[in-house]
Amino acid sequence: QVQLVESGGGLVQPGMSLRLACATSGFRSPYYVIAWFRQAPGKEREGVSCISNIDGSIYYADSVKGRFTISRDKANNTVYLQMNSLKPEDTAVYYCASDNTRCSWYTYEYDYWGQGTQVTVSS
Image (cartoon, rainbow, N blue to C red; front, top):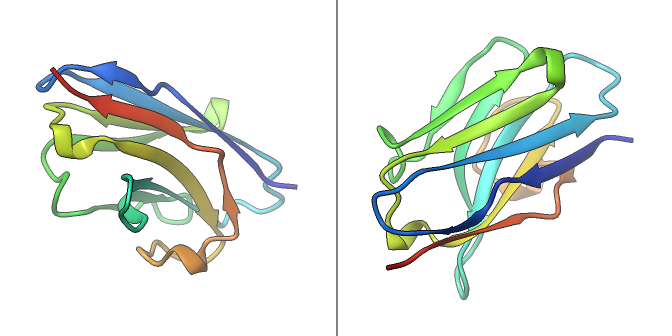
């Protein structure tokens, strides 16, 4: 059974940085992607970034391009989301999710989800 566990959330001031981690386990095949989504109160869950374990492709939502960086540590089966220059509008619960086909911004395409980690950006 695939398991995803997020960590690294917290409360930071605008302009500061956080690094989220998604620890993964249980994959039976190397063909999968890991995506980060976020959901703010009263809003729909939206895609933030995605990395493919298949071909290494990386994708970012326009709202985070140039500020967020996704990476993977294959040895530790962990995917990171480095978030710099954080803004109040980045406040949300951040989730990682996995799919065995391709990166997508559609939540219904993802089979497994973590429990989420809260990120709050406020002065």
